[in-house]
Image (cartoon, rainbow, N blue to C red; front, side):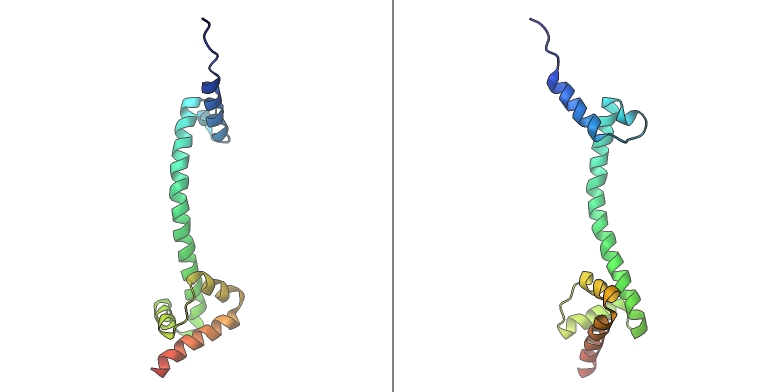
Length: 119
């Protein structure tokens, strides 16, 4: 009986080499090197998705803190005042307002700080 041509193996190899397209050196030509590179790339991508969320949150915090400097309120104090005043706005929305609609952000800051004075 004649040996099969290995169509399944060749498909698997093709798939891995297609994933490794654009990699440098032997990593896009040789199956064994490409397989390893694709495996590591997947691990880095997984970790990167978590890091991106962390980085975006810290960007929001930086933007809010920068927008608070004219009002002489620190970020941590503002978040506490916001919570105490009953305004439930997340960091993403606050950062967006600070960037795109500063007058609305100013009213939010005033409302949060006025709630402190009433107590």
